[in-house]
Length: 305
View 1 (cartoon, rainbow, N blue to C red):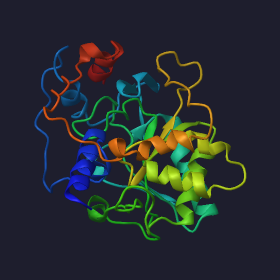
View 2: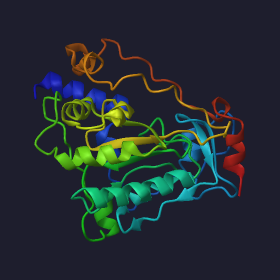
View 3: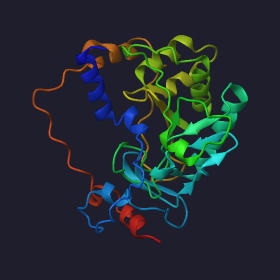
């Protein structure tokens, strides 16, 4: 890769909270500072990023995927017959009950229909959702999960292994297609994830979307749910739709009609998009989200027992 390409790739990862962050290793012995006072102007990530357990009461998704919080979360067990949670020290293995059962259902289907023994589960949401200290912009309302593009080992890993093992980058070095690590089972796993009716969309690297457009056979209706987004070289991001009748959850716009292949996908590989030239004057960072920017109920979620 040329220096320009390497710089562009790094900028893409930084902008997207991309693959490297999805695998960040927590330093041994790391401890967060105490939680600051809960005020309307405190950066919300400094608050939600320090809560260690869910609130009591029924589950609710409050707000939007990238601006909201989570009440009454369920925890995904760290190990199951067909799944294992990665980076457990992050404490991001919480979600709505619907998400927990979806992961369990998907992992069994993967084990039944592919050569993978099961799936490795990356970040879900924090105990009470909300913005994270670093990484994702979304994953805030308990309806998002990252699934690693590496099969689960046949033996249960130790916590140390889960904190240090890396996933598999399936994108080629030139970023225009998948590389040698991509296998037919990767396609089968993503297809299994997309076929579930609760899934609204799946985010993958554009190169992975290209491979899916080229290789998917038979009924291709599920391909529409798979949408290109930078990063996502090492994992794919599954998003469930808002639960029916839950007005506190703000839905995303419908997925665009069509399978997302052809000209719509070609745009991602144009020179200015694939390797963007950084601006001469870096833009000012956006101010951090605060509680006053979020649904009012999120303050109650933070203060709840």
